[in-house]
Image 1 (tube, helix red, strand yellow):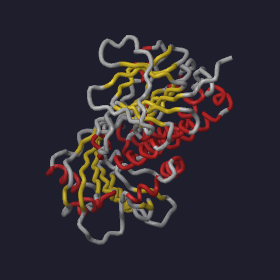
Image 2: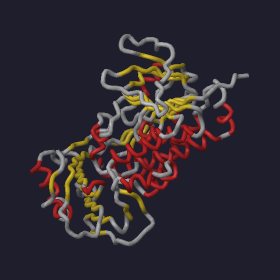
Image 3: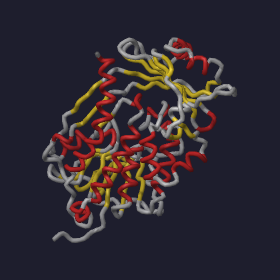
Image 4: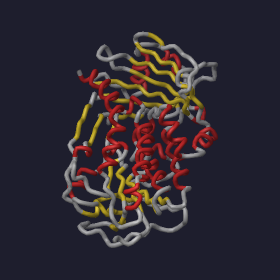
Length: 410
């Protein structure tokens, strides 16, 4: 019989998905270590690991409900930071070539905030858990284990500032030096479960190959959508909306734009287009693109606004599904999570919501009787059923996103 030992989970990635996974795990294992390649500071919007953070992040009502359930106090902290409450049907103006959608009061409630604010508040709430530690400025360079089971991760400290912060003030306890790493400060972190929530750029395929495990095949649908974003301060005039979206309908046209109020009295404006009809990142081109949308409402909103930021472009919008669910001999003790498993075109606003829903899936799997018994042993849990459940959760959002993008591709 396996000897009872304290259980540790390692989460790779400190974005929204990683924080959700860590929060769920913190209620069910003894210790959670979040490994993040970037050095975390107060300005999450400018971290290299979240280059898309400048763009509009409209959290859907289902995702907001899931997140506020997972993170008690989230709504209050967002409100205190100035994130406006939003009724998506009453406070939103939704315009297509067919006209403007009716506006009615609804229960589709959320808060409109920057990605940076969402992430910093959720990170603070996660790290307030006494058994959660953040090890930033470290790369997860390999999985430790074999094709049958993962038992930890090999880490390398990055040359940039890395805090290895911990709520308790202790430093992460690394074990034996990771084998096969020719240079840099490397270490090994043993774990009962490793969750890869590192996002679109996940190195999971290479890491799986490194332990001799099967590598998932991928489905990719890329409509070549591109975005450009700038922050504004709108004139102090009465307006009866908090978010305005203008979008053409493919295949007639692919241009669109959204302006959304966020914290600090600022408004974030994101323009998008596909193929050769992409939003420029120069001042005159950005304004001209907004002027040529199917409705003048967005251009009218920003024509006299104060510019608060440079224009930021973003091009990585492909839908990508790593089909881990098709691998029958998936290694125990390891799972993909969030965008590492299924990354969706962010224009449809589903990413954070799907990550929040996957948190519920992870919790239910951890509460299953067989998994619960494994937590007090040295035996890595069979994660195939978890992969299957996460994939089922991602299926409908995948079809919604790729169905729209296929219209553009076609």
